[in-house]
Amino acid sequence: MSSIQTIQVHTTPAYQVSIGPGLLAGCGRQLLPVLGPCHVAVITDSTVAPLYLDTVAASLRDAGFTVSTVVFPAGEGSKNFTTLSTILEALAEARLTRADCVAALGGGVTGDMAGFAAACYLRGIRCVQLPTTLLSAVDSSVGGKTAIDLKAGKNLAGAFLQPSAVLCDTDCLRSLPADVFADGAAEAIKTGVLDDESLFALFEDGTLTAAPEEVIARCVRYKAGVVERDEKEQGERKLLNLGHTVGHAIEKCSDYTIPHGHAVAAGLAIIARASEAFGWAEEPIARRIAACLAKNSLPTGTEFSAEALAEAALADKKRAGSDITLVIPQKIGACELKKVPVTELLPVIRAGLEG
Ligand code: GLY
Image (cartoon, rainbow, N blue to C red):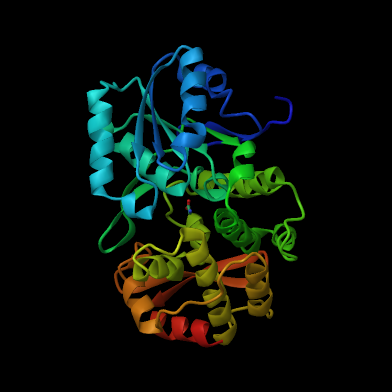
């Protein structure tokens, strides 16, 4: 396993993100020194289970873990109280104790929901993240955000629970359908706009000009630094929500039929146009961002009206009383937080849709 890259995340608890091939088949051996012998409940969805569940369960058993499994129907529509309750009941049925661990095997929905189950069960047990999509590899598996959606909006019930380890098996990326890969590209492009013009540039001609391992490692290194400085999103971590205020609104307006990365891509293009229109951007950025997203088969706008999006966005967590914090791109590689009155959101979204 010499091609495995590792990144340390210095949070509470501290943990290691491992990135490379073969990590699912070797997960038992990798996790034993981290977790010690215990019962691991592997939680996954109906898409991922046929691909990787047997491999993971066998590897864990071979390493001496007791293993149970929970499989739920794939899709954002499952990220709710009903599925959470099914998972919690299964953990209790399998008699997991506080010494035991949940393993989230899958994409963002699985990581968020299994992580939240781990955070709730017995008031909190350990969790490891085994991301199988580009989106979960570059973003959601790292940083400890866990959640389910409520009727009022996305991720409105959740907890912070840093994983004990993240094993990102890059072999999984080979089997991803193009639109699922594009979903992850949106979060990586977001990271480029936040911090790293050269990362953004890797996506600009539409055929990723670097190994996915390199993209994942660069995104995780950046995110780890932000999360170490602001674990509970009191300040700097809010930057990671670039494109998400409008993105989450698009997801909600579409009844979660538009996938997260696609919605974030549209949200990113919209806030970039608004940033130019309001004179917040230091240089023209909107066309370059939209062109990059389009080259990667991602949307740069939405059919929903500014009014519908603003209404949906105001139920979002980013609102604080009568203000909302927006993440404003200034140039490719630098963004700032801007607190604006909630009444300014509608004109901002309008400008972003029209630009
Ligand atoms: N996905 C944004 C964050 O983890 O803070």
